[in-house]
Each structure stands twice: as structure tokens, then as C-alpha cells.
Amino acid sequence: MESVMDLNNYGSHEIKVVDRSMINLSGINKIVSFDDQEFLMESNMGTILLKGENLEIVKLDTHDGNVKIKGNLNSFAYIESIKKNKEESLISKLFK
Image (cartoon, rainbow, N blue to C red; front, side):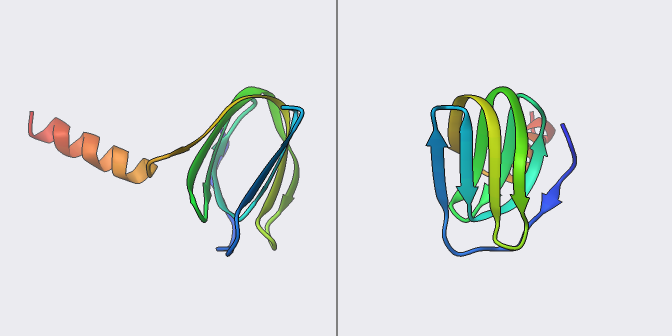
């Protein structure tokens, strides 16, 4: 996966999927990681995990927090914070 891209903090959040092949997102604060099968992003409404095939960024507007991705979308989900999960797993490993 690629490196982290920080975007500014934005107020509104919107997702538009067209024919499962074009995904438009607004209110994206950070792209945590991405490759051709998975995008992990932080939005105003939580962390987003987008999975598919042949995924690529078509447009990245860091000023407005807009991201446009093309490819074959298989799943889209809001997930718990990645940092929380890593901290909890580390603590649970220490006390086993």
C-alpha cells in the first residue's frame, strides 16, 4: 500500500457510486493507504474501507477534500479507528 496523504478537515461528507465503477467522495480528511485493491481513508464521519479491483485515483482535490476513484467496487464500509484496534491488540498481547 502507498503512503499516507493528509488532507484538511472538512465539514460535510458525501459518497456517490456510479455503476460500481466510479466513486466520488467528499469530506475526506486523510488517505491512510491505498493500492489497486483497497483504499483506507479517514472522513468526517469515520474511517472508510473501500475494496475492489483495479482501483485508482482519478482526481484528488486536497483543497476541498474530494476524491474520485475508478475501478470495480466490491465493498464499502465504515470501520472503527485503526489506531484503537492496534492499541487494543498490543495491550491484550502484553497481558496474555
